[in-house]
Each structure stands twice: as structure tokens, then as C-alpha cells.
Length: 125
Image (cartoon, rainbow, N blue to C red; front, side, top):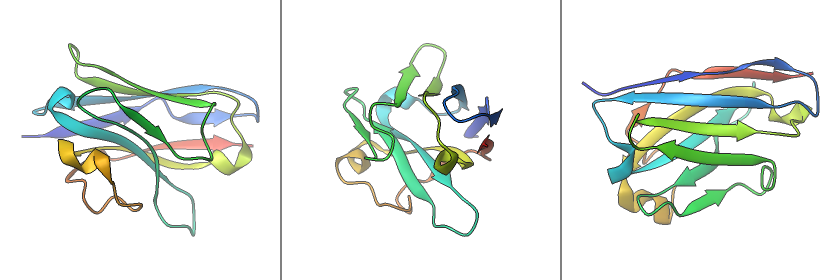
């Protein structure tokens, strides 16, 4: 049984930081494409960052230089360190995994990711 559980969301002021965690059971991040997505109210879900099985990383332009994705392959936890947060970063954040080939060209909305967490809310105001 695969389960992804996010934590670490909360409310911060602009310029603040949060660190999101995604604890995995029943799946190895090492063998798959890992990603963080977010969805703001009234907007489509968008990809934030991906990390593949070789630790190659991609970030959305809107978060480059501010967010850092990483994985602890021993503990099976993925992280999203978010610094210099902006109001427009507000939304529900989800971690997800997919077959490792997905990271080469992931869909914007994440339809090719087959395992999802329940999400954690981030509010910047």
C-alpha cells in the first residue's frame, strides 16, 4: 500500500520560510520521479519542482532561487524548502511520484503522476 503524507504547511508573512515534508511508505523515491505541485484557489494545479532518480532537478520559473527540493532516500522523505515566500505562493501543496521517465517531460497539471499525498496548506499574507 503506497502512502504519501505531507506536513509542514502553515501561515507565514511575505519573506518568510517554510519547509514541507513528504513521508513515503510503500514506494521508493530513489526509483521514481518525485515532484511537488501546488494549487491556488480558482487556479489550475501547477508543478513546482521535480527531482529524478539521478537527482536531476527542475524548478518552475516562479520559484527558482527561492525553493529547494530534496530527498532523503534512507528515510523515504521528500522535502521542499521554501524561502523568500510571496503572497502568490499561497496554495495547497502536494507531493507526488511517477515512473522515473516522467521527470524528463512532466505534464504541467501532473496527470502522469500516479501517487499523491493529501496536501498541506501554505498561506502567505
